[in-house]
Amino acid sequence: MEIKVKAPAKVNLAIDVLGRRPDGYHSVSLVLQAVSLYDTITITTNDSKEIAISCNNSSVPCDKTNIAYKAAESFFAKTRTENPGINIHIDKVIPSQAGLGGGSSDGAAVIMGLNALFNTHLKDKDMEDICSYIGADVPFFINGGTQLATGIGTDMEKLHSMPDCYMVICKPDINISTKEAYDAIDAAGVKQFKYSDEVIKGIYMRSLNSVVTSMYNDFDVFMDIEEVNNIKKFMYDNKAKGACMSGSGSAVFGVFSKENHAVKCVESLKKQYNQTFLCQPIKIGCEVILN
Image 1 (cartoon, rainbow, N blue to C red):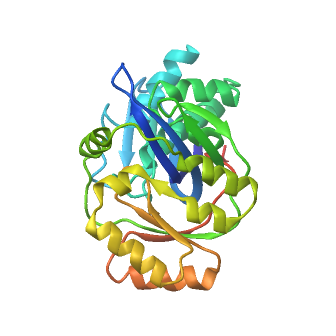
Image 2: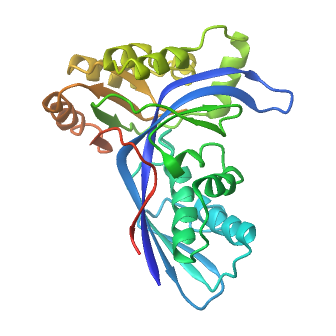
């Protein structure tokens, strides 16, 4: 048996880090948006009684550290389903270490695919519960669309859909230390204003202009990376309505109201940055495409 699942990327329309908790985690307020940039997960059964991972990208680890492996392991444990043996192949398109949630989306896609493959009849909430054991933003990708994540990032609330637009995503060849970013934010003290509240107001007003003028990312502000700033400036120069780093980086996304402006921006950025993509906001998360 075989099944395929589309695993979308996400961008962060807002990231407010609200302070460190006694347990060492950080309280956050995040506005997450799924976008039409996808990995494809193919799950095939065999008789090995093992979980095997393969990937078209040699830089992706294909062992027990891969989130897809952890997802499969959690699925079989939580549903008490016997594993006859499966191979999970990841056709990787979403850039890694980019703040786009590619690994987390792959994990959610595995849960959704195994649910369909083994007819376990899990509801969305059941799948989200399993996802929460795997990673903070993994539950988001079951329903995707536009959501508010609070607590440590695992408490999800569905929001109205983001206004229609085009997005350009550009991943420069730099890596960012999330620990350094959190340390810089912690040193600044507790913040009072939440940009995520303003983004949500813009979403409910159905005003693209209000959304993009409120976009904010604490990691972006406190790390203040020159190359990220240069990409954002280039996007604005090419008629982006707003631009921001996603997650803890280093991918940058720009929001455009007109497709031709977004296409021109992609064509120009691709001359320097190979991992540049044109996409749009979507209203769903992972999706089974073949059963």
